[in-house]
Image 1 (spheres, rainbow, N blue to C red):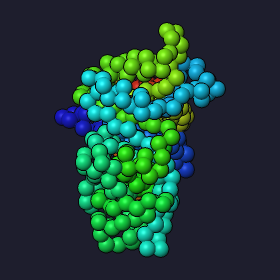
Image 2: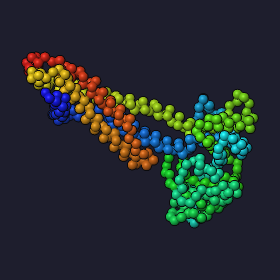
Image 3: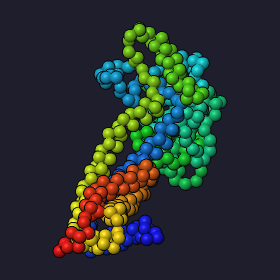
Image 4: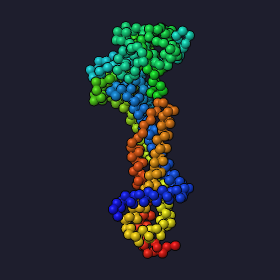
Length: 412
């Protein structure tokens, strides 16, 4: 035989497809578990990959080298109870001034919030008003659809200017430019200098779409200063973030008169805390996903073994004839092993198509959840289906290869 491997592959494929077509119901039920297992792994892993991509983008908007000095922590760790945390004292301008003196602090920006209703020519919207510094865009990343952010001079002088989110713009102005227009926020008037590009809904981080951002000093004079203050502090590069965190902690403990051994009554938050919590939350989910998919593939493997044993018994005389004509044990072994693999690959291919289509449709419905096909999940699915075919196909293939040609030809 000149090309034995090619002949074996062609014959195995023909034999496998004939067997599948001849026993449609049996084959369909057998391959169903393989299909479900592969589709489950690819679909769910792709959905989570898309979620990870969206969450990573939102974490990036918080700043990789930015610390948020606040009254309460974003994540409760170390067995700290809420009853104790809620006694934390608010962050005030005194802490802000102390942080501004830290040499490792590259950018320091205050942030206060309140809810107010904004009005313009009969239109109104409930909005979150943020008071912050002119350097805020360097700490929280967002794009401007129109205009600009307020300047250092406008910030220092407390000028009544504002930058509005997309929903605020659409509700108040409907169409046309908002730049230079005066809107009423509560009982105060502000001139619009910029419009933030549309961001849409996000997974728990908040959007600027319904926000109005004004200079910090203007916020204090318009809405009062007795509020919880957040201080955003940036290091020059991520390598200095832990040193900066410790410098802030020492400064605030000193100002607040905390004795050694006394817990901090403030929090220094960062995107790394959220990322760590997110990874811990999804770790068990990953294990569950692969367990479910693996179980489905295992069931499918048992089905493959059963159908291959039936196939061997149905083709005993064929095996005898092939051996009588010169086929070796290796030829018979490869033929039946390849048949098992081909059946697994067919089930895997159908599962792949279903597994890709499902997250793609979900991404069309949920705009904030991008479609992300995980190459890892595809590789795992291919390896798993091939392994299932080899592991559960080897016994029937060995049984066929070890048959005596004389006994096989006598079989009725």
